Amino acid sequence: MDKALKTKTILLVITGGIAAYKSLELIRLLRKNGAKVRAILTKGGAQFVTPLSVSALCEEEVFTDLWSLKDETEMGHIRLSREADLIIIAPASADFLAKMAHGKADDLASTTLLAANKPILFAPAMNHKMWENNATHDNLQKLHARGMSQIGPEEGDMACGEYGPGRMSPPESILQSVLDYFYKRPLKGLHALVTAGPTHEPIDPVRYIGNRSSGRQGYAIAAALELAGAHVTLISGPVNLPAPPNVDVIYIETAAQMLKACKNALPADMAICTAAVSDWAPQAQAKNKIKKQKDLPPPAIALTENPDILQTLCMDKDRPPLMIGFAAETNDLEKNAKAKIQRKKCDWILANDVSNQKVFGKPENHVHFITKHTHEDWKECPKAEIARRLVEKIIEYHDQ
Ligand code: CTP
Image 1 (cartoon, protein in one colour):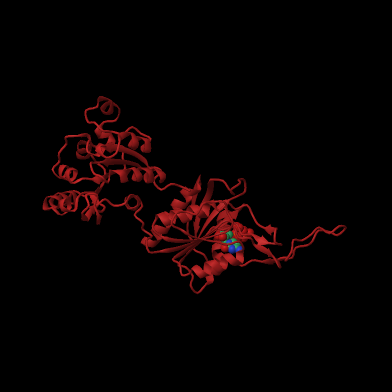
Image 2 (spheres, protein in one colour; image 1 turned 90 degrees about the vertical axis):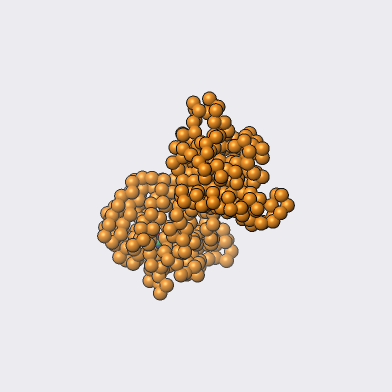
């Protein structure tokens, strides 16, 4: 699965506060999501976590000293902010907020922030009386007026034994804010139905008719839709892939089960049918394993046609307003895809030319985006990229 923050560099400033230990977990979460994390540890921060722990988790040198010649030649305070996509201050102590509000620049962290040209998200952490102090509020107003974003603090038991607002937000919430910042979640409130993978149509208890679909494209689309804020129901045939995070996955085996699961999941605002549904199923499943019979010809398997899930959903009284199908074509791609749109009554088709390539299981795909009136060749690219581009199209459609 593609990692949401794969191309992002985060500059994390850790200032002095007991909550600094949570920043170690934040580094881990950011990195797990693919981000490159560079950290500045202030003198106060280093009282709570060691530079070694921070650099071990970042797998990068930790930056501590404005006057370190090595840092200044190799990675000065200007470059630290220029090479970041987002700056997070966590924990942001009362003292550090005051410094920023007054434009002070007496250490590496404050100097870097004064020279920064990147968005700043800060997660305050302090005693509740410090938080409630008018001085802190005045400082916060200044920082908000300069366009900085704040997450937290939360109310709860404090390390000092008192109770009140001032606890740093949990690392998971800070990660969510980071994802929200990069992916504005424009599909929030919408329900997307995605079918993926093959179907297995049983012949007897041990044999089935199936196909080579890996499910990768459908899983990538489900993940990209979720990242854009949609509530995603993924109806999946048997595949060897981990469930995408925060997606409701319903596992099925046969086309009939897939159709039933899709209908149960309605209403939806969109359906993306990527599944390679078997066109036929054995008319009846043998109760026991079919045995070889000496001197008899191999058994004939009578087939029956499976329901067309895409077409059925397109005709349903609860038809999702946006219906998207896939098509594998070897010739006359545009003509065939447009005929398929007509026949199945869907809105868009992603068609792949399978005349001279093997698509199944490959991380890349070459598709054409086809609607009743348009045709775009998306050239060969990773399936995650196709998912991202399709989600962009869906966002445009909803913005209209
Ligand atoms: N589809 C479906 N249910 C089926 C068969 C297909 O939902 N029983 C969906 C697929 O998920 C895909 C599209 O319909 O979105 C593909 O249609 P299909 O007619 O199977 O296209 P091709 O595989 O390209 O086959 P053909 O050209 O033979 O029609």
